[in-house]
Length: 349
Image (cartoon, rainbow, N blue to C red; front, side, top):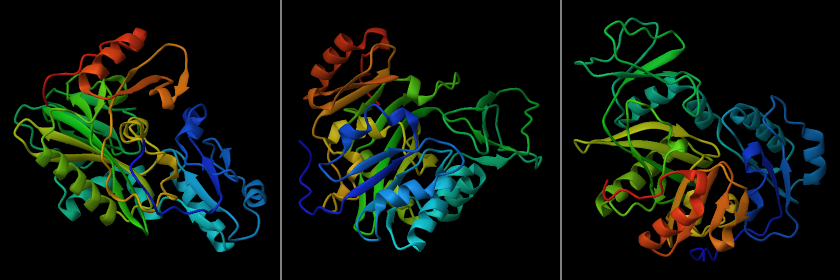
C-alpha cells in the first residue's frame, strides 16, 4: 500500500512517454485516472505536436506529462515550451536541468559551483588531468549515458579527447536517489544500493540493487536524501531526477552524476515505497522523504517478461521483486531469479 497522499490533482492527463523500455509496465505504476491517455512517443528527434494537441483538446482540459529519456530531453523541453505557449498545462523537465543531464562538462562544473563534492575531474583536450598518485582514471564521454564510452585508464600516458572528461577512480559503495520536484515541493525516495565500485566498471544495471539497504545508517541515508534535495533545488529540476553517489571507503560522500529523466532505479524505488511513481504530479500531498514500506531487490534477467506489481514481481531485462523483510526478499529473489544470477544481499555497506 502506498503512503497516504491525500491531496490529489484530478485533472485528466496525457502521458507522453519516450523510453521504449517502459511500454510493457508503465501503466502499472500510474494512479487511477479513467480519462487518462498514454502516448508512447519513442525516442526520435521530433515529437509530432498535432496528434498530441488533438488528445489534449482545449487548453485547461488535460495536463500533458512528458517523461523523457536521455536522448529526448532537449526535444521534450522544446515541445513543452510550445505546448505552454498554446495555453496548455505541462509537466516536463526544465531546460537548465536538461542541459546538465546532457552535458557532463556542465554537470561537473555545476557540482563545483554549488559545493557538491565530486571526484577530482578535468576536461579532455586541455592537457590537465586530476593528480593521480598512481590511481586509475575513469574516462567518460561528454554526452554519454548508461556507461557507453566509459573506460578505465591505468597507464602513465592517459589520453583524453576533447569530447571526454576524466575523473579520479575512487573505491567505495554506489547509491542512487530518485527525487520528484514541482511547485508542491520535493519528494525524495529511499536510497538504492548498487554495490561496490570495481576497476571492471560493471555498470549498475548489470548488478544487484537493493532498496532499502539494511547496512545503510540512518545518518548516511539522511545525508543522501538531503543532498539530493539540495541538488534538485539548485538545478531547477521540474519532474524526476536521479542523483548517483559514491560513498568512499574513507566516508566521504561524492556526487557522480545526475539523470534528470526516467531512470533505471525508478521501478525499484516505486516498488519499495508502494508509490505509483509516474503519477507524482497528481499526488501533490506526497512530498518530503518518502518511506520504504517493503524491501525490494533488482537483478539482470533473461527470462519471460512479467508485470504483476500487485504480486510484487516485475521482470523485463531486469527482475524486480519485493518482500516484507530482507530474509524473505533473499529467498524470493533466489526462487524467481533463474537466469538472473546471484541474489544474495551482502552483509554490510
